[in-house]
Picture 1 (tube, helix red, strand yellow):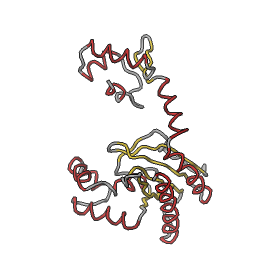
Picture 2 (cartoon, one colour):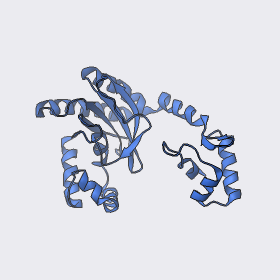
Picture 3 (cartoon, helix red, strand yellow):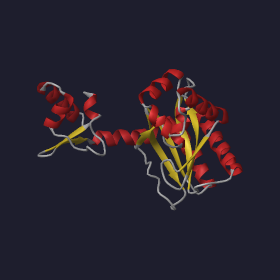
Length: 239
């Protein structure tokens, strides 16, 4: 039943019964039953003549996450401090399957607009916020991901083999933070550090996006250490 909710995204915000039936392959009676349960719970809304959309319960749940999620609660003041120190956008990104999901954003600049808004997911191989999470995947998780998309790792500049990828990610772990130039938004620099949960598993990253295509090594290191410090504070709070 929950696979029905996975059908909805920015490109497919509405689905008819027939289109769902064709995509999912459920028996018609099963699909009718699932849709009734989801609409009764208001996770879906039925629009006569158009089909189904996500329902108001989703909006209510989103508000509850913003108000009560410990990760957002502990990260928000640290992110506010970061954007107060620099003209930038700060992102809090959570690990989400084999993607990274933006869950909160703070900004102190209008010189550019981050396309990575709350609720938007992106691949694990693009941008500092993603690489700060990818670097802490287990050997098994990394190997599986590499076997599925080796070309994407090459295009990301992480290496021509799994061994080279592992060495590149090891360097990120040793430094404690990572930076990229223009991988998501042209003309900007991203700097990110990892956040861990109470089990010491990688769970998120905090990052800064600055409207500078290049910056000195000293400036990069200074901001990188500042972002890493904030990530450690958030991690300690979660534990």
